[in-house]
Image (cartoon, rainbow, N blue to C red; front, top):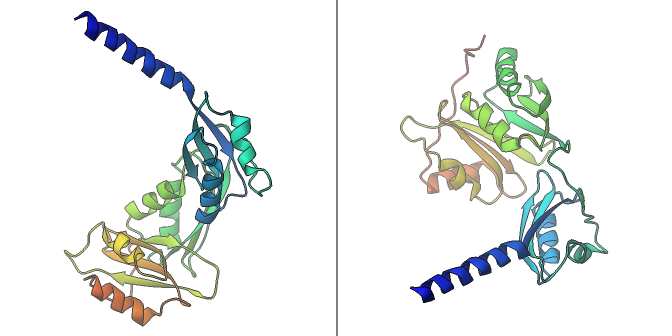
Length: 247
């Protein structure tokens, strides 16, 4: 009994010591814009043997580093980025991190549709302003990434019955919009479409039975894309002319 008690005390003390050694620090790295940047930052920071884990939030451009305080220090970890364009600065959850996201929403057909979307997004803390062009089916949102995220914004629009995908103002980017047959809609369809080479973004609306796709025409044609959908047993239909219910 005494042996077990001693072992338990040793275990508790050891865990307590480990907890004291394990520290976390966060930095903003404004020039970290993409997955490639994040990989470079993570690779550099983990060169410090005292670093246990690095978590990157690209949207906020924040790196969260967990390290062993008995083996390294924040200054030593930060020095791993010396000579790169990735400069760590202090981060606070009170910072205003301004971001903007543009969507193409093929099933946003009129100003009433846009107002319906705007009214829903206005309820989200952190959403700053919105702009839309119904003729181009585009909708852009400015927001504070420390209070909300593009995933929350997109999910909110999708749950209204629309099908937003990322909008790119580039000639080689194209869009396709389909209706999915009744009974064939599942949440994993977008994931399957994203596996197709050349696809930049995909989204489905469970309410609207719709699939929207953004793709790079230098990598795949619309005909090839449709073939790839069929090969994945994703049945699609061209939508009929729309009569907007929001009018």
